[in-house]
Length: 328
Image (cartoon, rainbow, N blue to C red):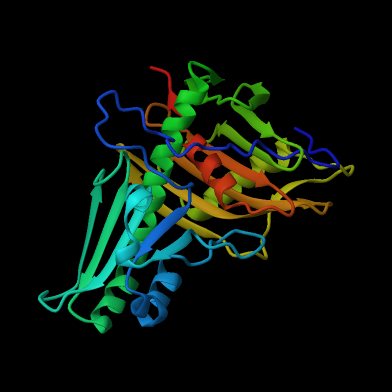
């Protein structure tokens, strides 16, 4: 794929507040709000004090891998007395309060309390000091849970949007399928590598899937970075002659491993840039070892959106990346 001089950016999917709500036996209302929004229900004095500062620092922290600072979520504080009517059905709610009757801090997670697919997180402690400690110690877990739930909603919406449309990658050891949602088009599809993109006049969102020919039993962050860069530098070129996509080495990257559906994943986030050009943006890359062939499967999603916020565009790409499945 060649990135044009004035790159049309990928489709900015306008998600309805009912994104992901497909229950046929719904008794609760749809969630309200937009992706990435989190309602914080706490007393004004707590929000203006150390507890509110802890929420902003440990839950609403800036994302790694963004060209400009962007918080992980849009935090929307509201007093408990004002938490009623449409607010009660918000998609992500964190209820923060002190209770002198508690013996210690407590963080609990619940789903569908007041609306379909809703996530409600209760953070309670006997005093302000222990409340701040609870927020600090559980900030990463809370962020991960909100991200997981948002991805679930987006994936459900993408599946509904795509219908039966799939982009299929064929290899010597079987084939893989990725959803092809409305607005996305195939860029190329060759043995072992494929790419799809959605473009608008201002944004581009793309996903590349590749299967390496190098058998491996495990993978670390350095190997994931190497495989990712080999694919993007070979497949994505810029508007200037000889320019191609690479990982920006001067920017901070993050890497983590996790297990999902009996599969071990390794995931990296950072910035891409053009070697020999002046473009860039955030990317996510993950990989796992195919159990049947021992070959690594690498899925990379990236966003180009000069002048626009990129958090939700990247979140949409991430949800699409995890729809990859191997054909039986």
